[in-house]
Image (cartoon, rainbow, N blue to C red; front, side):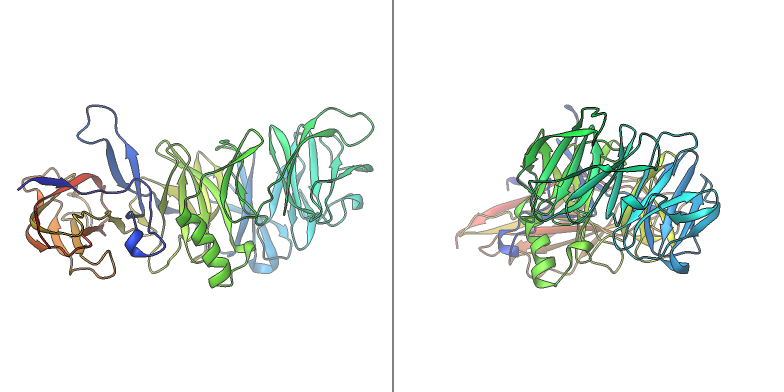
Length: 479
């Protein structure tokens, strides 16, 4: 019987219905291998989560690095703000009420002025004496802040932007502009070589022209595409710096290629955004983008309460993320600090570290789950004599937890109705450490129906997973 390669996808494509699915990558990413490897592609488990510190305050609202300290805001305790060193030791700085994620900025003064804006409560400053109202009332009720070329820039919902003095908190009330291309006002500003002013229907780009007696920047472009919500833009952050990526007002995911929005989302990603808003009644305030880097891959996470999609900026591929007993990933609002990526945790008071050095999330399983596309000879059926999965064996750990790490397993199931129902999973050993005597194989796998066959592979045990393909020995049977 001839061998037929099983078509595992390199980007997740669940489809509008299972019938048109190309397969799924759940907590799995596809990585290209160099020429000469046993396969063109390897499928690996997505990065895990450690606890940087299990803090007493809950409700992470975002953070900024100031020298050797991480300043972070929380919702608990009346809105506490604390500073952390690289060991996780905390120093209480003050309080500021609010529940939404805040926007942080610092200038180049020594020591720097540190400010943040709560979209519901306006601007504040963190000083040696605590958290205080922003010292210049001319800033008024800002809804975001960023820093670029020596200036703080504060945006307002009515479309005005006001600039501070250079490396100072003082504001000249005449140093402001009002965006003209966006009658819907502004959500926020971000700094990425230029100043991007993001609203509900347009993005305006401004450059530093050192205007001596007025607003220091001049407008160079109006992009006729807005962002969906204030947290729907990322990619420019320190430690990442890959560009300006955003969810547009049309509910699609874009990269600004120069000044041209280039769509990077698939129909499945677009559908997940629309389903969250229209079917679940979700708020755009609960849709966010945030970055992290792991093992040479730069990722942007599109997170909603109902689903999480992760975009690999380097390969232009998508995979899905879930956490234990959750349809979505519980990491959010990341920051690059102390040589690693930290994030908040929706399920605990932990400040999380995103890392590939662990294959769990605070000790809970990260289920490696890979669905194949269909193997079909439509309208004929296929008799399958044998299935073989090409996966690294001998990946158990002698000193690991018994039996999940010392004797890890893979579970194999299949569907002959496009993925609406699945067979009971067949268990096969991945092998104890340095033991790879037996291939991962299932014999006498039966006969398909006219919709062909899909396979689902799952690894629950916290070990390295390196899957490079699969084949089935089969022959076509006339319908």
